[in-house]
Every structure is written in C-alpha cells, then in structure tokens.
Image (tube, rainbow, N blue to C red; front, side):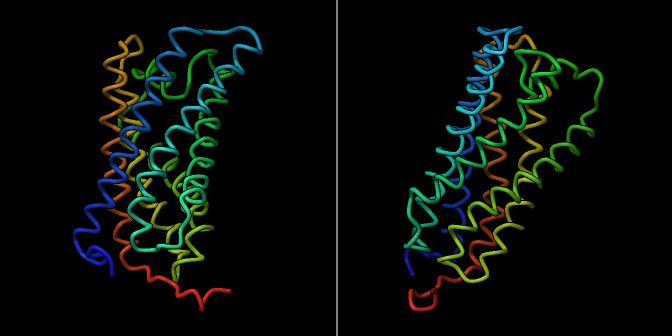
Length: 230
C-alpha cells in the first residue's frame, strides 16, 4: 500500500483535494457569473443568450478541471491505473452539463441571470428551508451523475465500484446545500470581491462535505489486479 491508503491520512488527503478543487472551481464560477451579469447584463438577442450559456459552460469546465485534477492526484495513489485524462474528462463533462442545465431556465426567466442570481434576486420570496431542500435534491441528482461518469473510469480499477455512484449522490446531496445557500444569501448587487469570496467559501465547504462522504466509500474499495479485469 502507498502512503497509508486505508488510514486516516489518505482520507484527509482526499478531503483536502475535494475541498481545494471545489473551492477553486466554484470561486472561478462565481467570478465568471459576476462578470457575465455585469457586462452582458440582460441580452435581448439570441447571440447574447448564447454568450451567457457559453460562459456558464466555461465555468463548469473550469470547476470540473479543478476538482478532477485534485481528485486524481489522490485517487491514483490507490488505483494507479487511472489515467488523468479519463478521470478529468468524466468530471468536466458532468460539471459543464450541470452549469448549462442550471443556466437554461434563466434564458426564459430573465436574460442575463443564471439560476443562482435569479434565486438571490427573489430571496425574499423563499425560505432557507426551501433552499436547503432544493440543494439536497439537485445535489443528489448531480452527485449521481458525477458518480456514474467517474464510475465508468473507476470500475476498471476497483471492485464494487458501483458504490461510487451512491457515494457521490449522498456527498453532493450535502455539499450542494452550501453552494445554494451561499448563492441565495448573496445580495443581487454584491461586488466582485464579495461574490468571489462567497464562491470560494461555499465551494470549500461543499468540497469538504463531498470529500468526507466519498472518502469513506473510497477507502472500502479494493483495487482490481490486472488479471482480474477483462
């Protein structure tokens, strides 16, 4: 075994990786959202709406790249056959699709606003409890998607890798709450520093939550010997 792969040290390393990955990823996504909302504003043309969707897709790609990279650097110590490109690609695809899916409704509700901004603008109409439940539901769905995409890669290297889907569904069901609450509590007219700072903080808390839950599952997965996989 390399570097205490079944012990507390490995779990801590995984939690740190997820925390850093999401902190940077959500921080960058928050920054991009602020720039889009304060430069493009409320586009009335198809071109403007497409530009917003592209920007949000880029935000998802950056989040996926950050999370995937940090995760790979830890998971490869336990499952050495996992290729960095495969792991990051699986993570990026889901993150980008998630941001796109979250931005599409805003094209109808209010041009130039992503879902987080739209929720923030109507914060007086909703309760924190509602935000928490929405975060849990969306987190479970997105988590299952992350888990499935990464499982396609992980299944070649770990026994019972299907558990990874449930692990991510649970982890993201908790983690997404921090992201949603952070976006909801942010006033619509917040400055770039506040928005980015909130993104960094909520991303870190989300990543730590995801990392802890998935890390517990990760420790229970056993590597597959080359001869065992066809």
